[in-house]
Length: 153
Image (cartoon, rainbow, N blue to C red; front, side, top):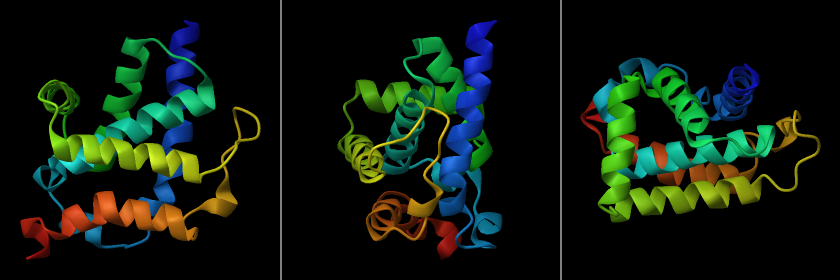
């Protein structure tokens, strides 16, 4: 039961942390399809970012709990079904895909750029999305890859 509460709390805090970056360009997300998000660098960045933020806000979590947080948040962000996103993460990770690894390293840099956190429940609103380092990392690992997708023509 405690694990379910932790999963729900992690999902809420992670979505609140990344929402400002997703909402910066209103209208763009309406033109995107789920397949536009299926790029190794984006998946590596978002999957790692969700994991690191969940652990940052809620402390250590077991693998199945982190997978539950990842699948729900990534489904909400990308529209990709939980089973497919999980399979993509496992496949790209096991193949040691270089673009996936680049995205994962970008997520580590993103979390480091957030700086030290206060309490586990705190989200650093003043650092988002106007912080130049955070914005650059998001654009490099998400926006840039999405611009190369067919939706941006």
